[in-house]
Image (tube, rainbow, N blue to C red; front, top):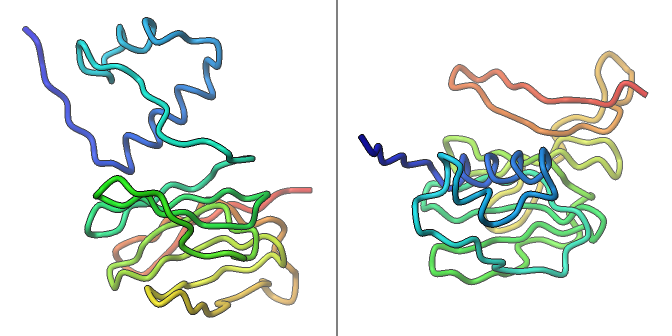
Length: 156
């Protein structure tokens, strides 16, 4: 029995990113044989000219935001297929996540800060330390529905 699987844009980007990290040498044929890619689908390069991409997050409309960290920019892949720079500079943001109000949370590790970015591109630094100790490379933020949050910091 052939089962059809559907993933949100954000989940698909994360899954594809994980697949690429696990097996850089994988061929298109290998990907097509996996259970993630639909039979007959072809992998297609949509854009390039990035140094190091991070933190895909989709807004309520389905637009996908991601960072090109070394180039200090957040990009937006719109639902109509256009790629634009959403914010530059962006504090060398990496991990991104949208909250229920539509604000974009960003781990801005240039100065080890956590930002909230409004749709008008203005931002507020939420915090940069804990009990007087500076954060060390905040990354990969995820917000809980009860108001809590998770994020990583480097151990070094």
